[in-house]
Length: 397
Ligand SMILES: *Cc1c(COP(=O)(O)O)cnc(C)c1O
Image 1 (cartoon, rainbow, N blue to C red):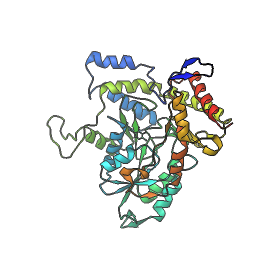
Image 2 (image 1 turned 60 degrees about the vertical axis):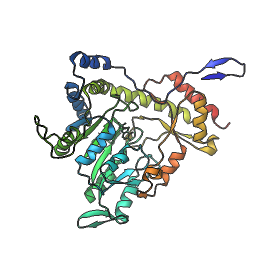
Image 3 (image 1 turned 180 degrees about the vertical axis):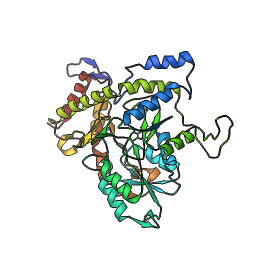
Image 4 (image 1 turned 30 degrees about the vertical axis):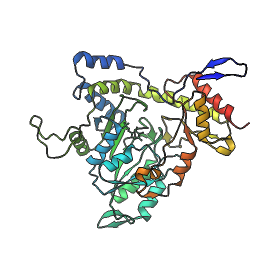
């Protein structure tokens, strides 16, 4: 990017990406070991080690590695026994993966709004929907409008911040619903005293390149249930019924993670707490600076939350700041600073417009105003100050 200042001096500005992986630990060594020993594929000690590290970190009994987070979600839904034509409550303001995974099983999403305070799924609206819009028939909870059985709640902890899990767990318990956590964006975040990924019946993680730790591509199913773990292992390994003979009772999937990727995962797990500390420091610097900038509202952290600030995001108030987030994105792009809006609320998407959505206005408002800022673990203070100065400089004088 070439920038010409008033004096005609040409200054080359380095591109500041939104978020880049940080591979600063034992990655080379562990991967080299795989190459040296030939253990590069779906068997090998790093897969077991990575699973154990993830389970231990979350305090869970079992973990099953998968090829990516979406496969983990698909498997978790299947292993929880979700049936075609059942319904699963899910956040409308989230990445599309959990909703797609619901559809892969033949079940259907019911979209729930975001909470204005935390931007996470609104537990009050989950409760309202279940209490007012559903009724129990023969011990099963059914959506009055569609007649379909409600089977599960799939809260997505977005942007590094936890969902308010207590009310969700309580209402799920009351109606006998399964809770499947999508912790892909919030590994290491804490809700009250516990880590997210250990509040439901089963949780899913992702190690895609943009996540707080990465294996290039990868995922994990984490659970305390031996039954779910066994089923997950079975389904992700082509549903093999005999260790030697190729015998199958059911349709399975090849959703395994390779030893090479797991080697990366072990090295990254060792760095996780450091990554979180850096992300929190980046967030604190931004939030402090934006106190001085009218119309830029920093990302929230609820009193009961310990956020990893995986993806630092602000709200842009068009009137007070002087431009909307679309314009701000374009201005920053012209300064070689990459930013990104949040996802289109999924109930608005062409793909899912026909699915039920319950009072999703807050998600739409957040989508209009939210912008994620550069927050790589490797972001230098100089680069961060450049982002801050760019935004302050664009604010209405
Ligand atoms: C990244 C992500 C996933 C999983 O993505 P994969 O790319 O399949 O690993 C799932 N849910 C959310 C909320 C995500 O952000």
